[in-house]
Length: 158
Image (cartoon, rainbow, N blue to C red):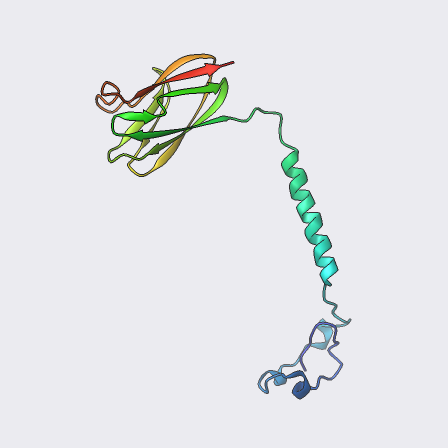
Protein backbone atom coordinates (compact mmCIF):
# COMPACT_ATOMS: atom_id res chain seq x y z
CA UNK A 1 0.00 0.00 0.00
CA UNK A 2 1.33 3.49 -0.83
CA UNK A 3 0.69 6.44 1.46
CA UNK A 4 0.00 9.77 -0.22
CA UNK A 5 -0.82 13.19 1.30
CA UNK A 6 -4.37 13.17 2.69
CA UNK A 7 -4.63 9.35 2.74
CA UNK A 8 -4.40 6.96 5.65
CA UNK A 9 -2.26 3.85 5.71
CA UNK A 10 -5.25 1.62 6.44
CA UNK A 11 -7.20 2.94 3.41
CA UNK A 12 -6.72 0.73 0.34
CA UNK A 13 -5.34 2.34 -2.79
CA UNK A 14 -6.35 1.40 -6.32
CA UNK A 15 -2.88 1.44 -7.92
CA UNK A 16 -4.11 1.05 -11.49
CA UNK A 17 -6.41 4.07 -11.18
CA UNK A 18 -3.69 6.12 -9.45
CA UNK A 19 -1.25 5.35 -12.27
CA UNK A 20 1.35 3.78 -9.99
CA UNK A 21 3.88 1.47 -11.69
CA UNK A 22 3.57 -2.20 -10.80
CA UNK A 23 6.94 -2.24 -9.01
CA UNK A 24 5.93 0.61 -6.70
CA UNK A 25 2.54 -0.96 -5.97
CA UNK A 26 4.33 -3.52 -3.79
CA UNK A 27 5.61 -0.85 -1.34
CA UNK A 28 4.01 -1.32 2.05
CA UNK A 29 3.42 1.53 4.49
CA UNK A 30 4.13 0.99 8.16
CA UNK A 31 0.73 1.58 9.86
CA UNK A 32 2.10 2.78 13.22
CA UNK A 33 3.95 5.65 11.51
CA UNK A 34 0.84 7.08 9.86
CA UNK A 35 -2.00 7.41 12.35
CA UNK A 36 -3.81 10.50 11.09
CA UNK A 37 -4.47 11.94 7.66
CA UNK A 38 -1.54 13.83 6.20
CA UNK A 39 -2.56 17.25 4.95
CA UNK A 40 -0.63 19.26 2.44
CA UNK A 41 0.09 22.95 2.98
CA UNK A 42 -2.19 25.11 0.91
CA UNK A 43 -0.94 27.83 -1.42
CA UNK A 44 -2.29 30.47 0.97
CA UNK A 45 -0.32 28.98 3.87
CA UNK A 46 2.90 29.07 1.86
CA UNK A 47 2.28 32.70 0.93
CA UNK A 48 1.70 33.65 4.58
CA UNK A 49 4.92 31.94 5.67
CA UNK A 50 6.84 33.63 2.82
CA UNK A 51 5.46 37.07 3.75
CA UNK A 52 6.35 36.62 7.43
CA UNK A 53 9.90 35.53 6.50
CA UNK A 54 10.33 38.49 4.12
CA UNK A 55 9.06 40.90 6.78
CA UNK A 56 11.54 39.48 9.32
CA UNK A 57 14.44 39.91 6.89
CA UNK A 58 13.46 43.48 6.03
CA UNK A 59 12.96 44.37 9.68
CA UNK A 60 16.42 43.00 10.51
CA UNK A 61 17.97 45.04 7.70
CA UNK A 62 16.40 48.24 9.05
CA UNK A 63 17.59 47.64 12.61
CA UNK A 64 21.25 48.44 11.97
CA UNK A 65 23.75 49.30 14.66
CA UNK A 66 24.72 52.84 15.56
CA UNK A 67 28.32 52.42 14.41
CA UNK A 68 29.22 54.60 11.43
CA UNK A 69 29.54 52.73 8.17
CA UNK A 70 32.91 52.83 6.46
CA UNK A 71 33.39 55.12 3.50
CA UNK A 72 34.43 53.27 0.35
CA UNK A 73 36.89 54.41 -2.30
CA UNK A 74 37.86 52.50 -5.45
CA UNK A 75 41.38 52.92 -6.79
CA UNK A 76 42.69 51.38 -10.02
CA UNK A 77 46.41 50.63 -10.24
CA UNK A 78 48.14 50.44 -13.62
CA UNK A 79 51.75 50.81 -14.61
CA UNK A 80 53.08 53.90 -12.87
CA UNK A 81 49.74 55.56 -12.04
CA UNK A 82 46.71 55.37 -9.75
CA UNK A 83 43.26 56.35 -10.97
CA UNK A 84 41.97 58.61 -9.54
CA UNK A 85 45.06 60.50 -8.51
CA UNK A 86 43.05 62.71 -6.11
CA UNK A 87 40.48 61.43 -3.60
CA UNK A 88 38.33 63.03 -0.91
CA UNK A 89 36.74 60.96 1.87
CA UNK A 90 35.04 61.63 5.21
CA UNK A 91 37.04 61.08 8.41
CA UNK A 92 36.57 57.73 10.14
CA UNK A 93 36.74 54.18 8.85
CA UNK A 94 37.56 53.94 5.12
CA UNK A 95 37.77 50.90 2.86
CA UNK A 96 40.02 51.34 -0.18
CA UNK A 97 39.17 48.77 -2.86
CA UNK A 98 42.31 48.54 -5.00
CA UNK A 99 42.07 46.89 -8.42
CA UNK A 100 45.29 46.07 -10.29
CA UNK A 101 44.59 46.37 -14.02
CA UNK A 102 48.30 46.41 -14.84
CA UNK A 103 50.69 43.64 -15.79
CA UNK A 104 52.97 43.79 -12.72
CA UNK A 105 52.42 43.67 -8.95
CA UNK A 106 51.70 46.93 -7.11
CA UNK A 107 51.12 48.01 -3.53
CA UNK A 108 48.77 50.64 -2.11
CA UNK A 109 49.78 52.50 1.02
CA UNK A 110 48.32 55.61 2.68
CA UNK A 111 50.67 57.80 4.73
CA UNK A 112 54.26 57.09 5.76
CA UNK A 113 53.58 54.42 8.45
CA UNK A 114 50.26 53.03 7.24
CA UNK A 115 49.31 49.48 6.42
CA UNK A 116 49.50 48.50 2.81
CA UNK A 117 48.03 45.92 0.50
CA UNK A 118 49.88 44.10 -2.27
CA UNK A 119 47.81 43.46 -5.38
CA UNK A 120 48.87 41.03 -8.10
CA UNK A 121 47.97 41.70 -11.76
CA UNK A 122 44.29 41.07 -12.49
CA UNK A 123 43.34 40.91 -8.80
CA UNK A 124 41.97 43.27 -6.17
CA UNK A 125 42.35 43.81 -2.44
CA UNK A 126 40.80 45.93 0.30
CA UNK A 127 42.68 48.17 2.71
CA UNK A 128 40.68 49.04 5.85
CA UNK A 129 41.97 52.02 7.83
CA UNK A 130 40.61 54.76 10.09
CA UNK A 131 41.61 58.29 9.12
CA UNK A 132 41.50 61.65 10.89
CA UNK A 133 41.00 64.89 8.96
CA UNK A 134 44.02 66.02 6.95
CA UNK A 135 45.85 65.52 3.68
CA UNK A 136 47.64 62.28 2.93
CA UNK A 137 49.65 60.79 0.09
CA UNK A 138 48.99 57.30 -1.22
CA UNK A 139 51.79 55.51 -3.06
CA UNK A 140 53.04 52.24 -4.51
CA UNK A 141 56.08 51.17 -2.46
CA UNK A 142 57.51 48.72 -5.02
CA UNK A 143 60.95 49.86 -6.24
CA UNK A 144 60.63 53.44 -7.52
CA UNK A 145 57.02 53.24 -8.71
CA UNK A 146 56.06 56.29 -6.59
CA UNK A 147 58.91 58.29 -8.11
CA UNK A 148 57.74 57.30 -11.58
CA UNK A 149 54.26 58.73 -10.95
CA UNK A 150 52.45 56.07 -8.97
CA UNK A 151 51.12 58.32 -6.19
CA UNK A 152 48.03 60.31 -5.34
CA UNK A 153 46.63 62.84 -2.87
CA UNK A 154 43.96 61.92 -0.33
CA UNK A 155 41.99 64.68 1.39
CA UNK A 156 40.13 63.60 4.54
CA UNK A 157 37.41 66.02 5.61
CA UNK A 158 35.70 66.12 9.04
